[in-house]
Length: 330
Image (cartoon, rainbow, N blue to C red; front, side):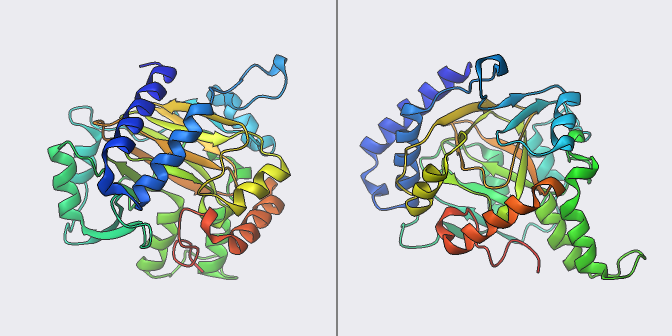
């Protein structure tokens, strides 16, 4: 399905759902759906021809992507493909293999549920066994779950190759200083401490079709990469916001639709990388589960901007997608 057709299908589904689901009034799902619907009505596909002026996104080969991230920072998202070393077995759905690689399904995980009241947290705790059963059965639902912070059971080979250069290694160096101090030996930190850092550096994002995530900035000012594994989903962002547009959005992140909004449909094998402070949202067609692998990095070349983003998030906590007190080690 072409990107425009995908977007039209999402808009049609949202229009129907907003008109029909009176039970979803004053819920997180209603708020996100309304905002995403209003933005998608004005959003366009990105301008990518550098000969025509400023671009909204960069579609790069592996070599071009590496050169871009190593030579500095990009103020627009970078899209590339086939950058993941890890390979699924090819016999099963990636979602099936993901769950088969896991252990201890009595553990709990935070799940975003659209029908939760907007006066409450958007998350509720669910047993991993229930999440597994729900996704493997592939049942139709009007209340699609979103698990955006799932610990990855995969080997440490999911980081896209173009992000393995020196400029992209600030976050691991911060980890090393926190865990080892002034010692150069292998760290003797507890397994829990290492896992906490690993969960920031890489994670899995699992969602049922029809779940939409309103515009936000990823917590703690971190830059993010996402690689689609199963199912396609829409990635949207505010392109090159002015200082005033960014300020106006931070004042009203749940209602602001000004600025220049762009979108791309990310398909399996494709990766998007976006810098610290990127205002972005995610949208999905109904009936298609999605799995993505993702992680956070920091570039040495963006230290100053990163700190500005963190300060803005501290002063405006509603612009972040996570609780700033829990998702990054201290």
